[in-house]
Image (cartoon, rainbow, N blue to C red; front, top):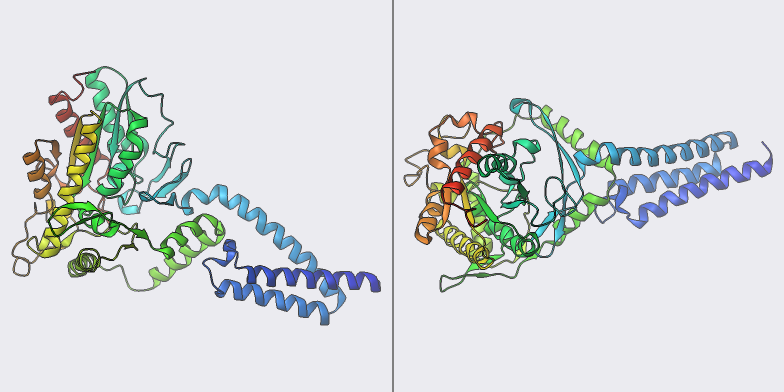
Length: 454
């Protein structure tokens, strides 16, 4: 190798090393992750320094090989990221983005893949968020078919079920069969949403959607807690439910953004490593009712007592243990008051739009039967516990207000709960549970002549 060629490869390798150092210092999120000089940045920076040193002291032939190796590795990594985005993106790229009005929402056009546990069948579920931000196919023009919009959380979104098994789709099938005309179902459910977020979502969407009916699903298991975590409303000293000035925690907002900008290969490999660590560690612990009760008290203290407006938890929904186990506690009473106020606002807004509204109250599987894989409640520790504690405040409010509401508690309790819900830590309803709920809701809507004016 000529002296000129040797100088060239040394400068080339040193230049590559300098690029690595500058990339580490730039703190770019693709491989750097969250802001700060973390371990990834240290590794990249260290590699760059090593390349600069090697370029100066190593033999020219070794330097030349390293230049070729670095260039080939960079190209391979780039191709891997492009291919990984297509193959791994639907499974490892979140479908959510921060939203100034509803805390977070779907990213339009996003395709997602979920695989159920072996205990729940092990199926791989694909679902699409359309360009309007709803699960399912593109919407028709308003007025082309009878349109029903269904709001709620993951029980409506149904990411764990194929399109045709979701509560929304099965409700549509039953309505079509009875009405004898085309019915377009709009799945407006978003996993981890509370009724407060659904209210603001309605205000944003209903005027443009121009539906013929609205269904609002409330999951008694954790929607009470969502109101505390979201901090969109509060109960004032006069007992009135009023809007609250909330703000999304900056770190949470940052992580939502980084989830869309970080390396897809890094996002795919990280969970695999953590999963291996969990498998080698202690087995998964059972549901801890005392922990859930303590978390409910902490949420109450943060929102109702301290008045902290910062939203720090957007997706982890805890069972409302206080409403269920200690219904006379301050936190439980506050949550019920908050829930009543938000549901009244939903009913008032939908009424102002001149639309029929149907509430659907979904019970937690563990409250339906002791046969479900949920811890037994000690009656001495929790003497006020009743299986209906979470659903009863919803039922009583609907009856007092004269709303059309379908409580699934009695009907679901009369059947085998294990045949209606998933298992292994996933307490969503399965395809059979969604089918039964769709049957009950369709019967109620038809019996009450919800579509009589069409």
